[in-house]
Image (cartoon, rainbow, N blue to C red; front, side, top):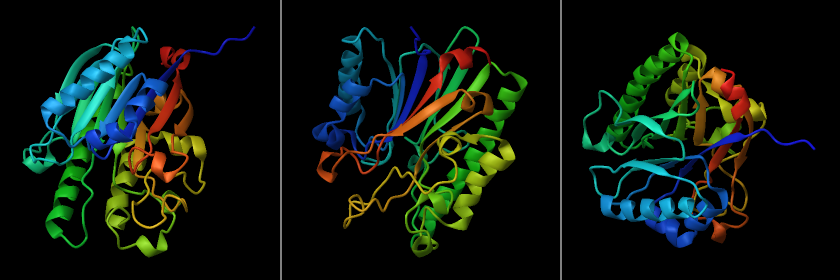
Length: 293
């Protein structure tokens, strides 16, 4: 009888407000899926509220005989941003905030955890929520590009560490608020001047992939097909017509990406059954392949 190899599941999801997502069913979804590592963005709640949900999710995992470690950073601006990271694996270190950025608007957007994945492998997982930007607001675009510039520096440092010390691998998970290529949104021609698809924004993703060396792991599994998407506007019939954008990514160091087996975008079957305007992206990895890194 054949047995499947053990897997590691990493999920990233923009919840569009944890309280609203809870009302709409995210707790049932977590109970059903139980990712090994879960990265959340746009939590948008004060610390006491976030704590109440992390306590709830810890209990959900405990009922399945799993230990869950939880970390989060709220935004210093009320009602904005907020990131969280949950893991069933032990952690060695956790870092909050993107180095070099000190303004309130940049808080609740970057969280790193060094996770002891195996005896040999330490996986740095990042939950990131990049600024959305707004072409009609130069300040917001400046804030986005400043954040992206800081990402360039940090991702270069992390990647160079993985080259020098292969036991350190990296997974960057989150809402990038950038559709990288024309395959990543339904209507590229009408959005060429829209924030999220500007050439200047897309060049940053080019830099992370082509210059630094990270792998867009979901895209490497799909090939150059149209979509699939992870976000649909609340306006009109974008969800029903699948007129979406791929804004949620997981980028990995190459050795980790090569252990990826498959992915799933858990799009709700109907508009009224979704708990966010984003759908969670989950990538599954062969632990046997990771153990050979």
